[in-house]
Structures are given as structure tokens and as C-alpha cells.
Length: 175
Image (cartoon, one colour):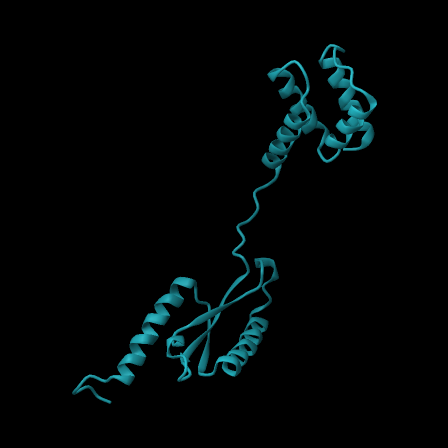
């Protein structure tokens, strides 16, 4: 809303309160600042609502009602998956010092869905991340793509079972 529109809303408000409301210049300036961020119609709806609730306009109530009305008018935002790329790196063979890292997985996250790059860039980032983890932590890592968090937990269980079978073969099993 423009400053002149805010002043017009205040004139209408004075008429609504039967001219019993006589604010100082400072209060009028404060009201103008309060109303500027909102649309004219929303500000007027809020003032009318306050008028129905009591004899005098209350700035904090008007602001809260304006904010509520503005929220209702905004289209719902699409759900943001938080930038989860569904690409992971996972420790397949942990270093000897850290056997508990077997199955440990790290997802590539980009902050918000709108910041997720094309798949080939995600894979380049995953390759870089894999090399950094192998250098920093040791062991052998792999890249998994198009896996949800649930699938990664399942993958960790499957990986652990496969590795246990390989490391501890049962007697009589083909080896």
C-alpha cells in the first residue's frame, strides 16, 4: 500500500469511529508505518474487524489480523523436500580402525529443492564426495542414486547381511 492509501484508510477509520478517535501526529505516523506493508483491502478488513470487537482501534490487533488475512490469501507453497537429491555415498568396506563405519551412508543435500542441480552434476558431486571420504576416513565407498532414506536403511541391512555372509560363511555353503 502507498502512503496516501494508508492515510485514506486512516480517514475512513476516523469516520468509522464517529470521529471520537483523535490521534496525535505521531500516532498517525505510527499507524501509517503499520499499514504500509499490507494491501488496502486487507488493512480495511482488519480495521473493521477491530471495530466490531471494541470501541477503539488497537494497532497490535490490526497488525495481527492483517498478517492472518495475508497468510490466507497466499497460495500454498509446494512442499520442499529440503534439497534431498536421493544420491548417497555409502561405506562398503570400512577401514580397520573404524569397523563400525560399514554401511554408513551420507546423502547429498543442496539446501532446497530448487537448488538441486541436474543428475549429471549430482553424480559429479557424489564422485567428489566419495573421493573425499575415502581420503579422509579410508575404506571403500560406493555411490547410490535414486534411493530414499528408507531404502538406504534397507540397503545398509542388506549390505551388512551380504558382508557377514562373505566374512563368516556357514559350513557347507559354497564359497
